[in-house]
Amino acid sequence: MKRITRSIALTGIVGSLALIACDNSNDSRLDTDTRPAADTSALADRSAPRGGELTAIDQSNSSEHIDITATIRRAVMDDDALSTRAKNSTIITDRTGTVTLRGEVRSQAEKDAVAAKASAVVGLERIVNQLVVNP
Image (cartoon, rainbow, N blue to C red; front, side, top):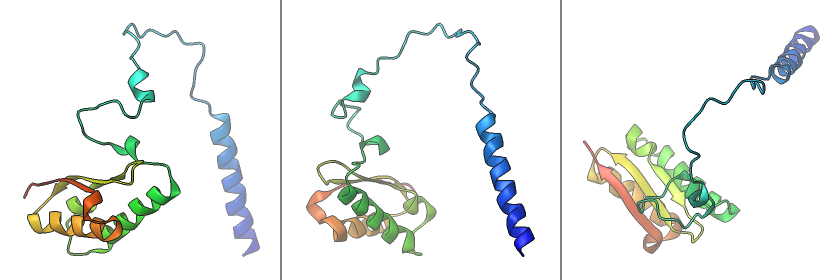
């Protein structure tokens, strides 16, 4: 048993060293991209409008907000009555504590179920339900 454990550990160490040694970046290659540089000023400003839709980048890094999102996600994933679409919906808790639900669900019942799980955590007034029914 010790021999197997040592072999596994040795394999892991060798693999890690191989990954560290294998640097895919090639600093000597020429940069042939002639496209103009993208304007990244909007990326720094999280309040910049992006068509009104929140994305994962809008998820707050506050531990309280991460816990809210995780609690809602766990409740959705534990519901075997929900479709894969509903379970893959996007759940975003922004820096104000507002939870936005986005994505597609198969029925109005699924849309209501996901919203109910979110409102049980933060209350109905802090939910923005952008789920779309697409049978």
